[in-house]
Image (cartoon, rainbow, N blue to C red; front, side, top):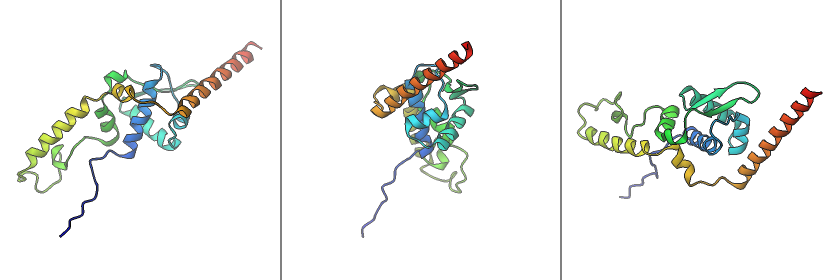
Length: 173
């Protein structure tokens, strides 16, 4: 008898993955700099509606701060060295748990009579401690954005300067 297993592993959702991509991009920029949804979507090649949804969720959970106005957008609420990846996962997906019973509020009928539940809780604790040790700063330390992303950012900065110069000229006229 041959047993076939799907190649399955513990996964985070696409939204969480993209949230980490967006935060890593923002973290690479000067601290306190605001980024709007459109520019982030262009820079990261992610769909604008998804970017908007993710940014709102991250702001709601306190990982980003939202600034209104012409130069408004989103900025990190604290430094990348102080932002654990577990916070991003929790913001996007809720509590992290290997199995349903390892997180606590389980709906499993076997929860209180399961002989391996304590082992799943130990495994869950080890995974949590590992993830808690990975900060946003660790995620940006060894990556290089594709050249077109860096070029897009330079282009956006140039466009912003041109708009500012036009506004100054209009104001002085």
